[in-house]
Image 1 (tube, rainbow over the protein chains, first blue to last red):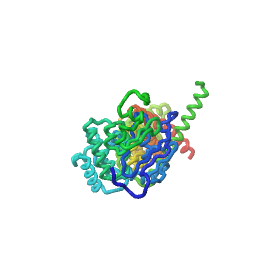
Image 2 (image 1 turned 180 degrees about the vertical axis):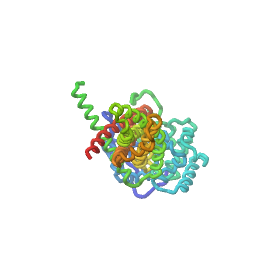
Image 3 (image 1 turned 90 degrees about the horizontal axis):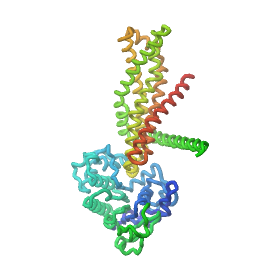
Image 4 (image 1 turned 45 degrees about the horizontal axis):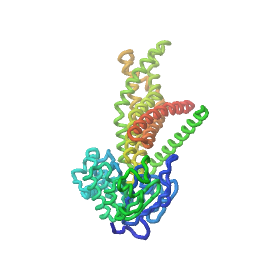
Length: 261
Length: 257
C-alpha cells in the first residue's frame, strides 16, 4: 500500500523501548517498532504475548512503564487532556468486539466524533455517517437501527465505518476477524484494505489469524515474550528462517514456543 | 497471616481506595465545571435520575409520613402530647427522613443503574472507544451524572417533604380526628426555612455521593459480567453507608448553628 500521508520524513508511528508490567508479570520487555507513512503493519503473536497491550500503548489508552511513543517524530507518551484529544483526531480504531455504543443508533455511533468532538451539525453528520456506512457496504436503512439489532459481522462493519468516518491518518485494528465466520472475515479484510488504500493512511493491526495478516499487511512483525522477534515484508514470512515465526504460521504445537502463556 | 499484618493491610487498602475515590471525584468535578460540556447528556441524565425517580420517592415518602404520624401520635399519647404530632412529623420529614429516604431510594435505583451501565461499557471497551474518538469519558459519562444528581436530588427531596407531610396529614385527618386546616396551619407556623434548607443541602451532598459511587465502581469494573455485578453491589452498599455517615456529620455541623 502506497500513498504517503502528511509531510516530513521518518516513521509515522514509532515505539521505542516500550516496557510494561502488570504486578509481577512483565508483558512488554522493550518493544521497538516503527511504521512508515502509508504502510500497513500487522503484529502477530500468541495469546497473552502483549499484542493488545502494544496496541493500547500505541494509541494512548495505556501508558508504558518505560520507553516512548512517537507520532510524526513527536514524543506523545505523556500527553493528556486537550492535547491528547487533539492527537486522537488523527486516530481511528476498530475494536475486537466493535465496542459500539449500545445506547446510540448506528448513525450516531458512526458520526460520534463528528457530533461530539468536532461539533458538526446533526443533519450534516448524519449525511456523512450514511456515506461512511455505504463505503462498508451497509445501506441507509441500517442507520436508524441500534447495535443490538445487528449481527456480529454488521457490527464490525459499523465499527469500521466509525473508525474511518473522520478520515484518520492512522488506523488501528484489534483482532479484526475474531468471532467472524470465514466469509465475513474475508469481507472485513477486503474492506480494511480498501479503506486503508482510499485514505492513504498508516495502519497497525494485531491478529493471530494468518489469513487476515497476509491479506491486510505490507509487513508483519512477530511479538513473543514481550519483544519483537522478527519483522519483514509479508511476502517473506514463509522464508523467515525464524523458528518462532515458522511454528506460529504453521500452527504447530511443538517448537520453541511453549504453551501456557 | 498475623493480626498486625492484617490490620495494616486493610488500613492501607482503605487509604488507597479513599485516595482513588477522591482523585476520581476531583476529575469528575473539574470536568463538570470546564468546557467542553455535554448538555445533551446532562438533559438525558436529569430525566433518567430525576423524573423517573419521582414515583418511587413519592411512594416512600407517603408511607413514611403516615407511619411516622402514627408512631408519634402513640408515643406522644404517653405524656398527653398528641397535639404536637404535626410539628414533629414536619421536623422529622424535612430535616431527616425526606433527604435520607429520597437519597437511599436513589442509591438503590440510580447508583446501581449507573454502575451497571458504565461497568458494561468498560467491559465491552466502549470507554476506550470514547477516548479513541477524542471524547473524555469523564466529560461524557461522569460529569453529566454527577451534575444531574446534585441538581435533581434536592428537587426530589422537596417533593418527598411535601408528600411525606401530606402522608402524615391524611392519617391524622382520616383516623386520628385531627382538623385538616389546623394541621396545615400548625405545620406551616412551626416550620422554619432552615429546617427545609438544611435538608436540601444534605440532599445535594447525597446526590453527589449517589452518582459518584455509581460512576466510580462502574468505571473501575474489571472481569466481565461478574465484575459488573460486583460493581453494582459495591456502588449501592458504599453509597448507602456514605449517605448515613455524611448525614450524621452534616447534621452535627448544622446543629451547632
